[in-house]
Each structure stands twice: as structure tokens, then as C-alpha cells.
Picture 1 (cartoon, rainbow, N blue to C red):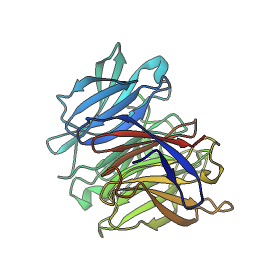
Picture 2: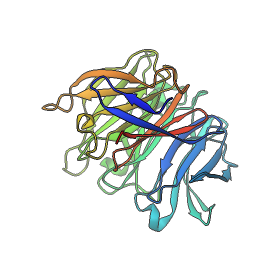
Picture 3: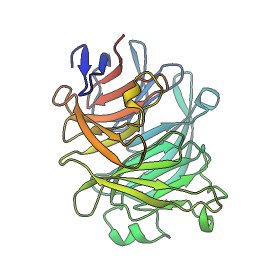
Picture 4: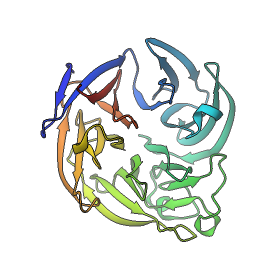
Length: 312
């Protein structure tokens, strides 16, 4: 995309091309060691360490829709993956040891998936695993609390239900059609989700949970996104290297072929005030975006990964 990207407010970002030769990227994760894990839709997981790219998984569980690393990944080595096998989701936990994924442990099995499977998997600031799954083509299933299609599930890292969940159920939010992104604002009070609704429009929604037990989520804001977008994932800016990015959300736009920056009111972080298209038409489909504590953004197209950081 060129060496430098300039935003509407004059921020200059250096674009460093890190990985190429990938196939149908579904999601990315970055370990504290700097290794980049790349999940491909076809079911292959690759790891990039410097210029070396190794293959660590070609899954018997089918394609990959999303992945997340344990917050304590450096100690546990745990990698969590949403697979799509046939017409069903599976959430599997692995342990990465010496470049191999071992100790396969299914957490969630055989939840109906839509033909164009859509899901998002991320760890929250509370250390719990949040899994957003599409409705499997059934609007009835999405609103039934006894079924996990069309839900955000909140789980312990071992797949059990947290003790503060209502009715001892992992269901955190229901009624989804096609979720595609999850992330939290700092300091972590608000969960934002990207989804395509039954009306075909894509939206972002803010879900808040009070500290009281049991934890019950409530929607506090919603916005329609530019169409077409095709949200792949979303991330809130971390760090303090770019002051004007504080509180900004970044969305990967697969169909729009750009990175969407959403700015919020400094006094009211639930009020979106403007948006800006970055990288438009420059790297192909933008499949995933991930923010890092050092203030950088990792952006993946269908076949490559870049790192965006403030120009020195």
C-alpha cells in the first residue's frame, strides 16, 4: 500500500508489509513474542516468526472462522479456534508447543452454522472467552435461550460457564444473525459487536454489563455502518502513541476493501461522531484488524499481513 498512510487529521502511519502468500485469511493473532498466527478459512493455521512462515495445523475439524490466544498465552500456550465443519461450529482449544498444536480439547461441539458461516472469538478484559456465533439460518433458534445459535457465549477458558452468568447459562446475548467482530473499549466496560442483521444492514452495537451478579448485558448504543462493508473484525486502538486515535474503533471491511476508522465523542464514548476509510482499494479485501499495546495495528488482506505504526 506504500510506505506512509496519511489520515484525514494528519496522522502519518508507516505500513510495513510482514507476510505474503496466504490463502483466504479468516483471522489473525499476535503473541507477546511477536509471532503472528494466521488462520485461513480453508482450515490451515500458520505462524510467522520474522520472515519464516510455518504450517502448524491442517484441521480435521474443518475450516477456521476465528481464533484467539489465551491472555496468559506465554505460560499456557493455549490457542482457541472456531472451526466450521459441514454446517456446524466447533470451538476447540489447543496448546502450541515447539511449533505444533497438541492437546486438542473441544469446548463447544456441533452448533448449527449458516451456509456463509460467521463468528467471532475474543477474550474479554475479565479473562473470559466470548464466542459470537451466527443463527445457523434459523431466526427462531437465535431467540431461544436453550439453543446457542445466534448468541454470544461467555465461557471460562476450560469451556465451563462462569459462576456469575444468569441461570447458569453461558448465553451473554441473543438474537444475532451474522456476528463478525468483538472488542472492548478501555478500560473494558463496554463490549462492541459488529453484525449483519436480518434486514441485511450491518451495525455496531455497544453492550454494557453492570458489576452486580449475575451479569446481565444491556444494549446502550447502535449504529448502522456504511454499506456495503462486509465487516471481518473490529478493534479499539490501544496505547498512547497516536493521541487522536484514543477511543477510535477500526473495522476490517471485506466487501468495501478498506479499513474503517470510527471516531467517538471524547466526552461521550458511546456517541460515534465520524468515520474515515483507510487503505481503500490498496490491499484488496481487508479481512482482519488487530490492535496492539504498543500502538500498532495489524491488518490482514485475503493473502497478506501488514503492520501500521506511527511514522517516526
